[in-house]
Length: 367
Image (cartoon, rainbow, N blue to C red; front, side, top):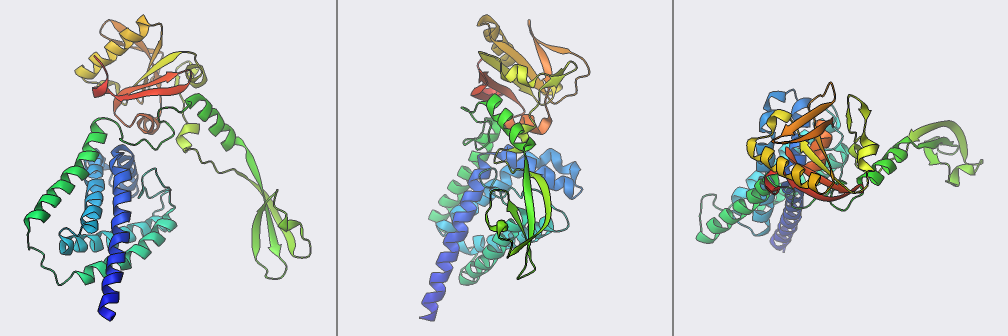
């Protein structure tokens, strides 16, 4: 009876770990650019900025490995070996998240990409729950042989590896398979930005009261009724704070400008189609991408549509960039905001009266 209970507990722990790794790995594999930005943040905190050039490769490998481990746990493929990797991974993640919550704080661990935001302490608590489960799984399958290979397991291992890495590589070379950011197709960028700015600018009044019975303080909003009970609560302080926004912060910070000033409202609110060509670095636009930009500009001009070039390179004067016989005006956008919006180094975001109707990596643009 006791052995049966242990087996059931191990199966439950394995299923929970598998589901967590699959969900976490998948939502990050479909958006390796987002994970790479998070990796760069960690590298900067730990003083390893020199490694940022490999952040994309590491992002694809990390997310793919996480997804692959989840699939192997779920189908019990190479279970002895994968249980060791799972325990080692959870031990490492627990230490890193503890450091992130204490001495080296980060705003968001990024463990579920942009699908689910967790604070460092919430992430650490999650890992404290999963770490014992990883130990239970490792303990349960410890008697199995590590290097006992079966044809079926070899086939599934190769399949899971190809699938996990393939998703990340495809999303890196094109665009995320699933866009979970507020810059996805169908979003009115002009309206979303104005709402985000209004929400961040609107202060919220916070009332701080002390419970006369327990001596503990508590915060209330103005529309709460409980603080009005004078027999229970004593006023301590009143302060204002910005209301929390469910909108990604970079939307409120989205800004298009050049030497003449801020052109954000003018471009986003323009009627008709606006083709925003995106180039993280002007000297990073290769020949084939330049030809695609030239073709896009030529088609837009023929249809009477607007074309601008957004870049993270600093512009100290009004700048025009020539693509073949075509010329387009350049504007500055923050590098992180540009990558967050497009999820590629170069490409195009097409607006129709402020609404995003198309996004493409440069290699997917029509010639």
